[in-house]
Length: 331
Image 1 (cartoon, one colour):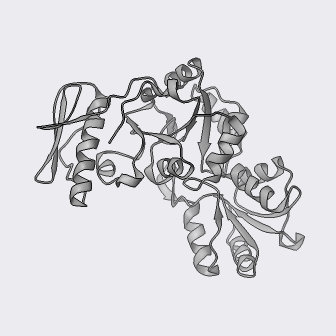
Image 2 (tube, helix red, strand yellow; image 1 turned 90 degrees about the vertical axis):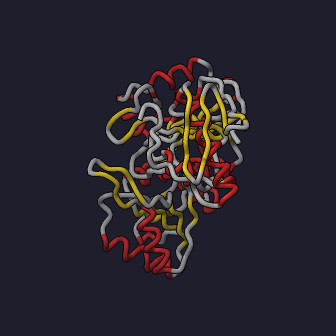
Image 3 (spheres, helix red, strand yellow; image 1 turned 120 degrees about the vertical axis):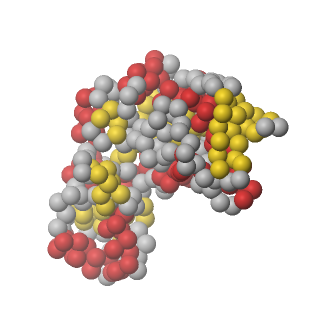
């Protein structure tokens, strides 16, 4: 279910990294992330920082990463706003007039590729939407009427939530749902899990053997599946044991690791033995619908062994195993 592999920086020349939950969590860097990424660069891997958040220009994201001890240039950052702008250029050409509904990241992205932001009276050919904390209701109404009347629509992403200092909050996907219901129109979507954002990342940064690294199955891992590249699911963000237990076969990551240290360590595939799934001193089983892990070994092998037992149960029974009472190492 999980393959043997040498260190991933030896088999992939481009590492595409989601940000929140992978490099940082809210206002704080993920412990060890800066060192792991510096080592990846030293090993010759190109790093690309990929975000569905369309509100901040790439320069602002690069500055934030640098402040976390992860040196990043503007060209290392690729946003869903930039992928959206590329879609518009491909469809309508440079210089096309664009109606924007979002934050400054959208404005910077369209100007970067020679598109012209205009109001409704400027005869736009497409609406481009993204998360923006200061978007006015009157602008939402005007955009909805224009789309209902036939204006093309590109949405930067469909993320229903966004992390904030006060906790999880509604994301751009909530606005997309509202406009979709009102207009009956399906937008073209640029962000993960749709292919445009990762295609744009590979085009900008280069690389023959890309790897997508993320903490979310529904965006990061699904995005890797959509473009046919390998993926590494890290467990420093939103995915824990309950989420892991419910990942169906067609949505699973190629590789699994507790954190970005998984870029540098060999991945040992758990083996199915008579007593359960085994790796490096750990044995994981699901008995009477409940996960149990026993033994002693490394953290990464604990997670991989547990994942294989959970996925075997899900494949055989069609429902996730109970993980209540199981405490992963380091948690």
